[in-house]
Image (cartoon, rainbow, N blue to C red; front, side):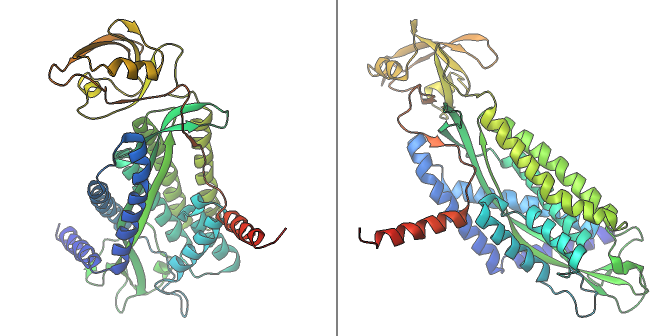
Length: 431
């Protein structure tokens, strides 16, 4: 119990140091800029934007919770990513630096490749084949697994918050309703630097807490030597993001399925990494699994949403509800996204303009025949004798939308830059 309290004290001390880390605040600033950029879409679709303060503060708080849980897992496993113990090899930032360089280069091909599963997998394979750069392969891959496990946890609890409804044109030419989810979380994560101890065998935490014989779970290769190892905790600011679309499912169900799949991927990668710390062959398997399995998850999820049956598509009869504002007449009547409005005050309703025309007279009492997502028919009603009812506060999937967004999973940044340069050159040529 005393050991646990000492470790908890060191974790809190490291997290406290994060407040003085300028890189963490740079991440928060980038977070503010990204959320502010998305406000334009929110205003166009909803008439107003979500509170910027609420979006940023919730992301920071959820990120801190994710960082704490992830740090506990890193500490339990004793994950280190650098070969500090190798004479003349490894440095505090070498592995992370190479990963970021590879990640940025991959992002030029496609922005979604800005992910440690791709860059980390390539760095691990480079080390296994060329012995460069100097990294602890098993530890690096285990860290990637932990980061994605944290991400799956954050997607589960916060991925669908502040999702934005949109009208989307799919590759098959159909325009349907859907949601986009864009979340960014700043994560303070504890990682380990490993050095030779001055006395005794076994491992110690920060050089002052002697750990039990079973620790760490992920054995460092130098643990077989005669000297004890000192695991020095360092807090590293990390940013995790989630960008996805919900077309064939509601945002909540989409986030749940994505979180479960990503969580399973993470656990498999962590298990392979632990085995790789003992059997070298599994290091190759884990290094290949990291990028390949992650890419398969992305492609499967994209195909599922883009080719599956839309959840928010206009039916032949009635109007499909895409979004309901809180405390609006529709919200008070417990109308939900995915429901269909079949009649209003006994009149069949098959066009959003017909609905707008009816509400344009500001009736004081309306009753609606609703077809729930489950197929159940339900009659709901609402009254407003003081001001009349000019709007239900619901966003309807239009049959012929005036504007829409095309489904696009991202293109080559390098190609876009080249095309832009060509356009500038063409403008300077007289014909």
